[in-house]
Length: 287
Image (cartoon, rainbow, N blue to C red; front, side, top):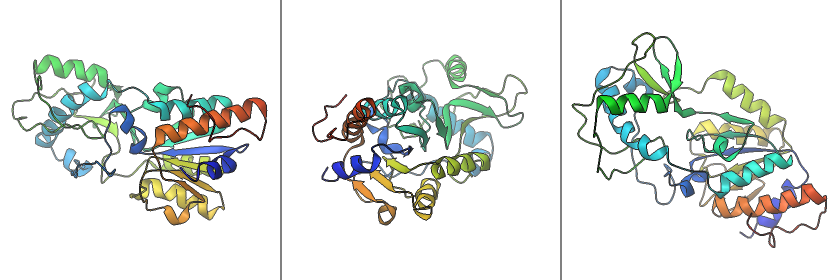
């Protein structure tokens, strides 16, 4: 954490916008795709999902098991630290690549869910948006005991490694009987344009962009770091290991998100409360 002081100096007293990725949620028990302990896997693409009932049966069977566990995840210290920073006025808004909804659960209010929310379901025919919890209850009724006792590895999108899906019964839209899909941006699909534009606007209104828990491997998140660099907006990056955006950042803290954000939050919230430049992140206790 040798750059923690530099990160604090850059963030203190400035309007901060945050960009987060899967690495922020690993301490909540949700694995990431590209971290040091990530297991290589190929998630289902949008094109595959909409190809027909066979793909949808496979997805929902696996996701039904994964959601039963993923819905139990709780915000960790990193999520809570960012929520405290928003309440203090230090953070103006947050863009997340995660679909787990943990920022909202932690108390963050100005959040753009770039890739959607896994706790919502959308009908492919009529666009009706409903609760994932309600669908989970319906699928449980259709498939009693399915997945019980299965110790399956869970992916960041809630997918579980379940092989026997042949007899899994689907549930359709209660409005039009259309096929249901998680209200998320699958691999191979584009983030809605208005969501991207709102994110660009949020970044361009910042004094500093704080990036946490992402390797910036995909363009979806990297573009905002590139926009910040193009607009001469400093970038603070908190992530373990190398990222695709390392050459664009002003300060990098190569460390875990939870302890680093907790220490920064304690120091920055102290500064907001006292307006004292002496607040020291190296001495601040984890809140």
